[in-house]
Image 1 (cartoon, one colour):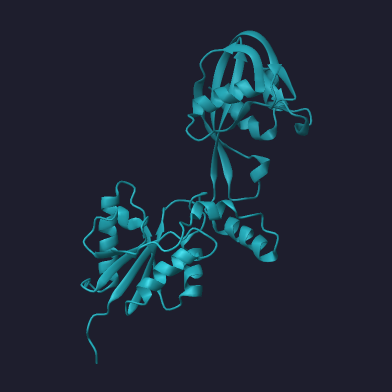
Image 2 (tube, rainbow, N blue to C red; image 1 turned 135 degrees about the horizontal axis):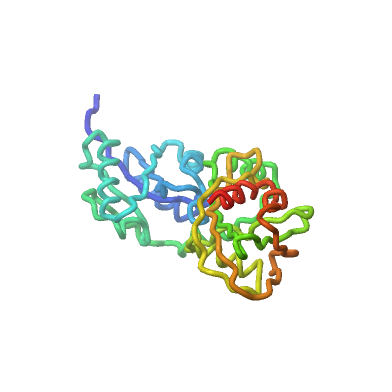
Amino acid sequence: MDTRPKSVGVVVGRFQVPYLHPEHRRIIEYARDRHEHLLILLASSGGLPTMKNPLPYEVRKHMVLEVYPEAQVEEIIDHPLSPTYWSRDLDTLVTNLCGGDTAHVVLYGGRDSFLNVYSGTLMRHVIPASLPHISGTEIRSRVTMPTTTDGREALIWATQTRYPIPYGTADLAIVRRNAEFLLIKKKRHEGLCSFMGGFGDVGESDEETAMRERTEEILGIVITKPTYVGSKPIEDPRYRDTPDGITTRFFRANYLNGDPVGGDDADAIEWVHRHDLIERLVPWHRPLAAMLLGS
């Protein structure tokens, strides 16, 4: 029986595209044709799907094995601090997968691959470019709305298998003389009112979200700096009977002066006395009012 250690060609990539493009195939086949064993490590962010990393590991693994069933496919997670630590993790993973013997292991990559940041101890080989650069970002940008049964099934699968999303919002109560609250009205709420608020933008604090929403929904007034009241999950009807939900950070500010005018996101505005507040609100904002009146 031949007990010599197998030579292993290792390819590391994200492959965050709907198909393996020619450059992917060229690098994989370059490694495969020079070794007894082909190991493909799929890099993952460790987080939820994003525009940059839309495909989970299992989907990409299936895509690779469809074309290269002889390959061993494993996952490697990005390190949050430094490529140096990621290189250490890569060496450890490959060493364990190869039974501790890495003398016949070679890492392969293209000119702009992970090898540019790799600082580990394994042998490496940069494969010279022979094709024009192919951008995964550009490929993803060309993906169009699915119009087939398979495409619709894929979208449904993605929503069925992802983690529940806890959406974050900020809402603001504007108070006058500690007795009246300035609320907004929207036609689809059938005469009921709501506090102003909405989803935060990336890079925005909760306080900034509350103030931005105020300027979008009510104009013409001056208020004090918002103070934090508390947070509360709300039964937003858009996510009713789903695993997803909204937790809002609730603020209050005192009215100082000015004549309020409804902004683009409000069909009308109304001052409501504190005694009528809860019954005048949409049901999912009533717990916020109870928290506010009890503070």
